Length: 545
Image (cartoon, rainbow, N blue to C red):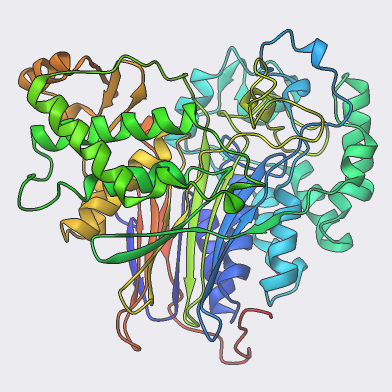
């Protein structure tokens, strides 16, 4: 692994997709803040330094583990909302993908503010300082971001957005400094007035002015109905002797559990890791789970009241595994096409020395969201209007006023047999989130491999019809032939592909005086870091109750 991709500390750990955000979170821990303080500081900073994936204009989902006396885990559903004034006739049964009309009511400020108010310990203005400083003094554009800006050059028509990231119609060179004074001013206003300023204060007024000037769909009434997140019960299950808690609907925890329950019927002893058989089993397990999730969506408001949760049950894993064994033996394949998805997100993981852990997956949906920024406010609007179903009125995620969009997030907590938290992990990648995480969890929990090695392994994804996406290292003529017999066309995504997610993981100490360990994915710009010391002048701050 590259430098900065693995770290250890006795005082806690932060793993994010940006070194600036990682440093922001580690600073909060050093100051005596808890995991929520660190996670929120890192999340705000990601909106500054990773604007292609997150920001104030997006939505955030969190998995929070309170690890002391309560020892409970909470899924914080921070879904954004469709504007209440929408007219379905405007959509012509085609989702909006770009432009100011493609955005839902942003929820990230409400989610991060809610988390800090209820579970944090540091003042809001203190937690925002790293993000404000980074926006004001600038951050270094990465090679990855330069590549993405080049890729999206024709799609980003907004001149305000281009003023930050392009020069003479070309993406700014990687290594150049990006200054964002408008975003710094927005964050400073929130630091002074509180996070609700985004909805009911000066920022909210500017946002509505922008919507009115450019015929956007969000109105004052939408912002007045602040999208306060809902606390939900996590999905619970087991895998290879470990207990897992992950995100319920509208997230993709159901798909993750079906994959893991299926893989549990193979594993060490009868399936060599990273072998041709291993990749075939993975592909078929992924395809089955994602097909089920698409064809059997559920209403998140009713999920825990529904008795039939077959998709996350062990017997469904056994049934799917039996079908895979049949497919590998008889070369049969069910031709069912999955819809294409290309959404993008970012994930951060944090743990503190009090036993608390936080995983936040936040997004503006596709890369650079709606490809347009909030005028004079400095953040990209999301394009979550593209994540709704606009054809089937009976679909749980049909586009209605105030509706919440479909999501693929799956931040996950791993516990040992005694119920002690061992790992917090997550990834971006739209429908690939569950397939990426299952590969990492399988390698670590089933095969006993080191987390940093497993994160660096080449990856595979299957789920969209007859295509299997692979990183180049996997592909051989023999494997192409085998997948052809299964009905899959192999698509080469290159080495360490951006497409294959970006895992951020934190492992907790197994012993009381042990070290936290962080691991960051080499596929993007992530790093991990823990405090080298704690500031003695600060009192210990634990999770609020």
